[in-house]
Image 1 (cartoon, helix red, strand yellow):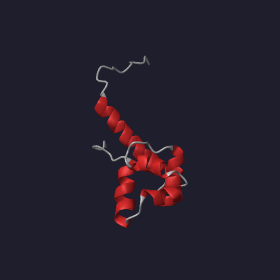
Image 2: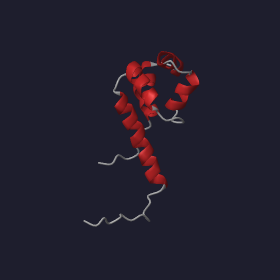
Image 3: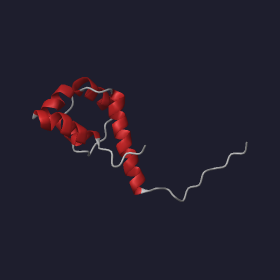
Image 4: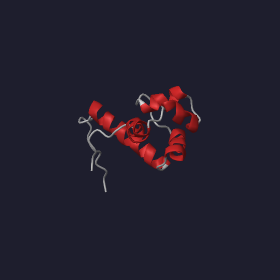
Length: 96
């Protein structure tokens, strides 16, 4: 089932971890071992969650690294589909 506008992982981080617990990006960045600006770019949706960041997020915030990467992939795919549906492409018919 396709999701409609899946959230960027940064939205999830902000909505489930930072805002409700009144924790700053600077505090979590220190726990993650990254610069505050690096983490702020993820939270704002300006940077994607990399495999390394997914591992860090898993250790500090929970969830599996795979879930963080899947969240990013779902978001990226949805954006790509909005930008171009590639309706001009046709399936190649392989001979059997």
